[in-house]
Length: 323
Image (cartoon, rainbow, N blue to C red; front, side):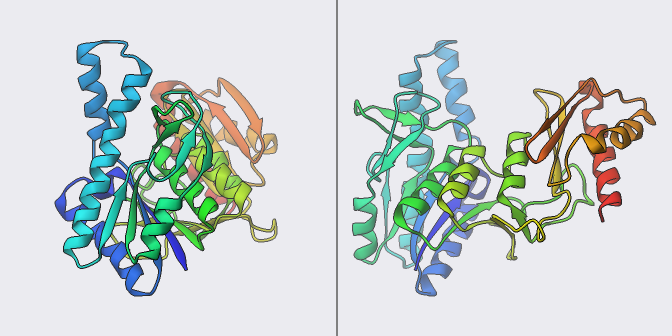
């Protein structure tokens, strides 16, 4: 059985975390799985590369930025392969172009056109763990390209779809998907499963757990997607299409600092909730400046200085109502 495992930057930020991530992959291999590991750049590597480029030129060419930023994931892939080998699991690293990830020409925000994973399959057939740099590919002109922020999630799901993987596991620094960010709202509850439509609404609303494009890809290709912690063992959260009878009325609340919005996701997230939510915020003198009903989502705009308070109030309001 083929398993895709993606490790984010926080899971690779130092040598101990790198080793822990490698041990997760090794444990799956010992169970008889064929493993493709997808890695992000470690820690703050991408931000440091951006700062370095901007110190030279405030507006560097996008093509050269892609060439620069792709090195972060390639570094992680090589180090992961070395670590796996040290643990007794022979591995081979691949840049995006070597993995056969072909994209369009939009530097900095490319879209995957197709994947030809022949070299990955050959490595698996040779008994190796294939380690692939996420977030990147190659254009039709042969230039390096990057997929934008969160692009390693997209790489992992796209590879799972292209290679017919049994499952795609996304490892991060939280235990799965919660009703809100547990770092902001400690009482938020972990969800055993979440409907992919609700996950997409949360991703579009500002949640950093999964990139929206990766959720869309998983929906379109029926990929079995799991969100897990690389720091603590646990069941995590399954992201899949649920029957409406299995789907909770509300799945979660998130916020977007740039837009100063709070978004509620779920099959009951609509304007029917607006009077109650507006009243609850009004009790704390928080005005709703604008509201928008989307598919499976309700978004409220509030003053920026009230955003976190509004998030806490709305989480308490809806999960008290729909507990």
